Image: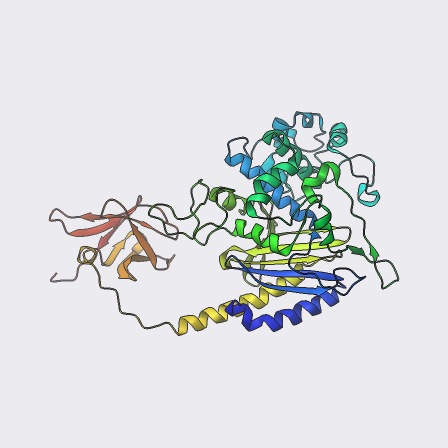
Length: 483
């Protein structure tokens, strides 16, 4: 077992069980992913109240709006293939949308980017006049398009975060039109099968249904719940139809966590590049590093900066961590997927009753963060002794203190086998690795505000290093008297 999780395993089980009881959960399957592995699972309660079996990591649940993360990923895959731009107006690909009602803003501003992060202003629901969430009579896509002339841009674009299930239903239709195959077929063949998500489906077959937890709804004034219906969402399958397991969602979140050291270019991640030093990608070729990063970048933040929206992930702070994820609720089921990229950690909670499980994910994150930080501190305290790295002769002439603009000092030193620098000018920078280039006097900082910029060591007429310059300022080397 993972060393950090082993230390807190009993605490996790105890805390999760108490929170499940408090939420009146019927049954739940909980998983923790660390460093690419499904490192801890826990089954709470009952998969089916007719029996005594607890849910397991391969028990299926409806995950409702977590489906949206697959839809957004499909959009970015099509972008990576040059078939669309995420700044395209929706009407570019679904011309019928030109008949919608721009009650606020314009139809041209309803772009794929804004739809994926819910700032398009688009109405939340399809205006069929049918209470389909209650009746289960969900409209087909053809029926949705029939009433597109009654669909509104209800508020100003970019003015607020306005969740829109309709937006993701229409994105599913767009995927079908651009890819040339039905939405479900595209997601299945291009995402689920390559990832080995064999227990994930939009309409489970008999074998998968036999492994699906029975969904329950509480009834007023009674302790015993009733079995929930399994409605087919028709034209809006792309926003909330999916059934899946903790095991499969572990594969899914690993795709979005990416390798430990991901490239920053637009190439599909598929293992170590020539001259590179990044972790092997277990799922090469599905999503580019560029798209993975763009999907996780905030597009909207609340005024108090407490939370925001990415494409499609929600983003918030929890116990000093930046947490991204998505939840879902549908009759009989509640789910939450949360991940912390910096820790390469994810928490998955699936329940067979509608409960808001974000608090459970947050508690697990709290326990693991504290345990991981303590473990890291202990490891750092007991580092094995090592010999200092001798400075190569060709690097020694760069070392020293440099003085420049704004009375700033730049210190250049040799540590851990490479050149480093730091700046003190009122905005003190931490010690930063200087990466060499083809020019022996030119380096590029690995991190910080000057990351990727050129830093050039200049020489005097006699060939001695006398200054270091970036694109805008020069720091002159201080030489002690007598040197």
